[in-house]
Amino acid sequence: MALNTTYRTDLEESMDDFSMDNQGLVTALDDIAKINQLLGGNSVTLNGVKCLLKNVPKNTEITILDFGCGSGDMVRMLSDFAKKQNLNFKLIGIDANQATIRHAENCSKNYKNITYLAEDIFLYDFSKINIDIALITLTLHHFKDDEILKILKKIFNLVKKGIVVNDLQRSKLAYRLFQIIIFIFRLERMTANDGLISILRGFKKPDLELFSQKLNLKNYSIKWKWAFRFQWIIKKI
Image (tube, rainbow, N blue to C red):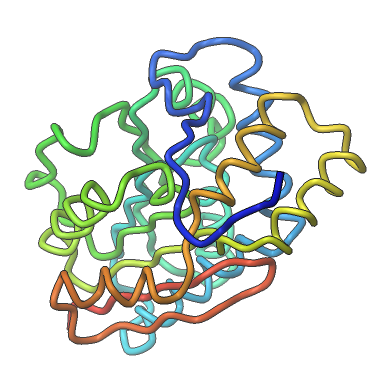
């Protein structure tokens, strides 16, 4: 059957089940973090954060909230970066799956500036948190277009400085290359299947441009990054 990437697929991933709590979930979370780091995905988010902090004094406390934080690898990377650069980061990870948050907390025991929330983004009251920057890494593609607009509108109204989106490009080449990665690294079935569906649920640049127009965004940039990612930086000011 021919591979068609014209439109985003409606296929669901195993990890879309927020009640999932088993070893397969932990394995998948760790595999995703390793692949993301190996392919340079962390740098896409880090560079976006640097962009939003370009004119901010180094001693300023910056609160960064990672929506759909998974195992917490992104906030741990940012904590390590802040320590090396003598920056004052307050980092919060949020995920709807309690088991995912439990794993993230176990992986982050040595990080004093990281906290986690097991909450549904659509239901949680974020007004009690002063958020400077929001991160959305490999998370938006899990939602349908109308949900994406709702999420981004909510987050944009919360942040002071901006949003960094790091998500997958929907392309045939990305799909085929991930099939090679599955073979080379002998990925577990859930990780492999979810990864392929993730690519088919990913984005093309016109998708992100259309979201930007519908949200009436004034100050943003969309750039293609290796490996088959889009970095979408949305500035508040």
